[in-house]
Length: 144
Figure 1 (cartoon, one colour):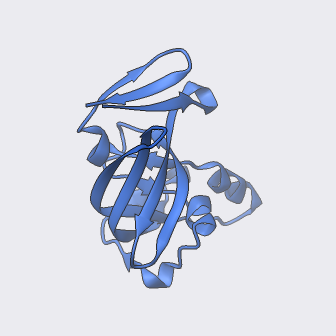
Figure 2 (cartoon, helix red, strand yellow):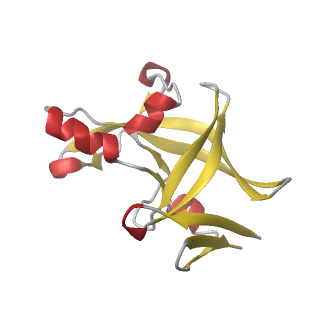
């Protein structure tokens, strides 16, 4: 089974997937950059806003995340998440995750806000450890 993605900014690999969760209710597409340095799949601030996530409905994580300028970033947990990948026209593969990290940066100025707005969501090792990750000129391939 193979999940095909593309190469984006800086030739980094990304995959498109659907995020599904019942509390809070989420069922929307999202782009995730493949990041073997991220221990957990993470939703960036701008994607959290686009998905309509309300931080008040999420559990604040006690594990710190370091962000821009080595500042601690508030982060929250979205629990019982399904990440759904299309693997063929009418075929899908689901990865069930007990939790996904949701970032909440607190930029102090316009320059920091511009940086935060560029941060991508990440597909972390919690998913990637189940696959062989490969790259071609135009693609990233996750293969079981």
